[in-house]
Image (tube, rainbow, N blue to C red; front, side):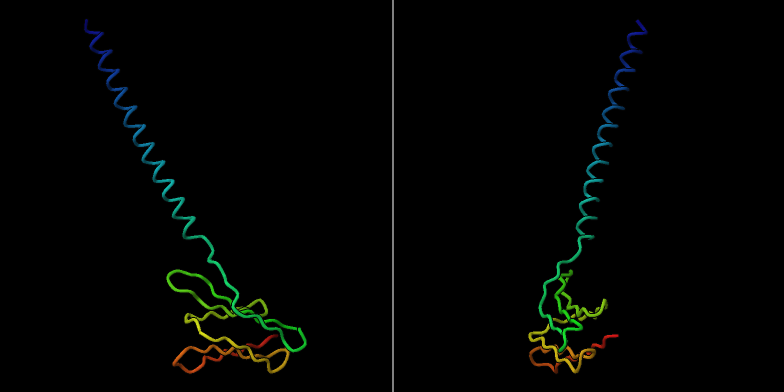
Length: 123
């Protein structure tokens, strides 16, 4: 009964290879899910919180100051005329003083420090 032993051996090999294939497929699927979740986490755009908005004296231009919730520390973004200026330290007080419709100063004040003055010029 040599053919029965060969048949039994072939069945065992087939079961082993099927088991290994299922295990590797499951490992691959788990890794794929982990990579997809990590990719979504790191590509998620940071949320912005509006802190200050100011319009020029004749409502021609606008300056918007927002806080970007970036990792590890939040960032301050001054948006104007399709441009932006980034600051890494968040101030306690934000004020915007317009010189005219095309020039302004954004004054960022932190406790115990000299105010940081950012000049904004529109084209």
